[in-house]
Image (cartoon, rainbow, N blue to C red; front, side, top):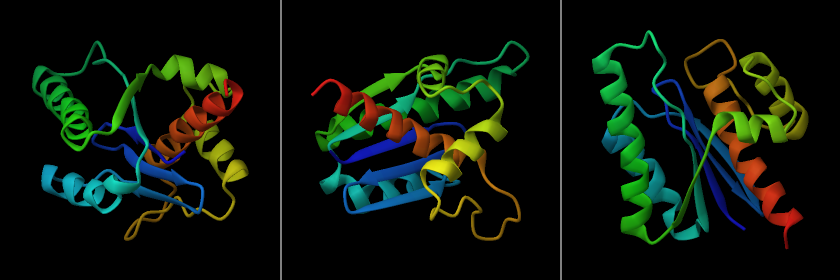
Length: 149
């Protein structure tokens, strides 16, 4: 099963979990950057799993609209490419993986499950929680798929 996991926020990430390799990227800065990245893997992907978050109470209207527009783009991309598409709420996948809302815990679990993956994007100095969570979303789907085979 070839899975793409997505933490869709502006500070999110995109992860590819393939039987032969694992790749993870911070969220590209532009829609074209996202399309270019996804196009590199779209022929190999079985399913796309996107975290279904909601706007936060103090989040501004423009920010919420931007997030919704960004989020909807993934569903359309999957539809246009014929990729199976699923959404998962953060509390569901995190609970199933023994996590809470602390992003540091997501980074630690990701490092334990994928010790060879570098979570520090090029040009940055600290580990990227969006990349970690994208990879954990993909792993959550893989683990659930294996459990119900």
